[in-house]
Length: 274
Image (cartoon, rainbow, N blue to C red; front, side):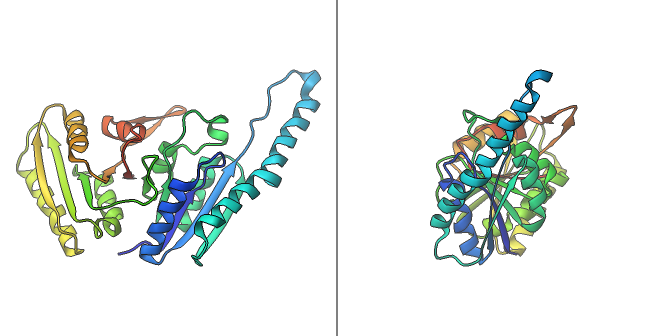
């Protein structure tokens, strides 16, 4: 198993280095196509009837600025980072970034993005929402910690629950797990019973069949997600692999405790699958 196509979300407001250099490194390792995608749009200003025409003119000017200047700047920076690698494609879209990434996911095995900068302006018109990507794209999302230029995969922790999402995450992560020196498959349960032990043994066996040597860890704790996060923190892992558990609730995403924490904790590299 290997990745054949990597989609990297290129932030229009920068910096683009962490995501692009990491995605390029993964593409090189697997001989994969690298697709750089930058998307942004402008919110239509709210105004009274007397100012509608002027507001639309300003809105169109701002959109033209993105198309004629910003996309060109970002593309030029992208080309500098990927110079020397031939299997590269560039895409840009004047549209909502999250929706564009979700749509483009059909062309990739893996989506790579940097941790979102909550201080950037423009909101969802200029910034990709990782929650929307992981739940809507049907592809694994590798979200970086904000300072990674080359993803280390020496030590990987797999957060295991016997669920569809976790099974998907383990399978999606195999190409990265193959590069690891140490893989720990950890389960946290209020009570570690026979089913938990059997499920962990099956995962270790599955990984072994794919050439990945791993070991299992059982943690018995009633505060499951807190204990798991503590284990992840103390492990000093280079990457955490986890299922993403969530659903749409009215106009926002509702998540389980671990998923919510992994999405918001920008100090770790995470691969999430739904």
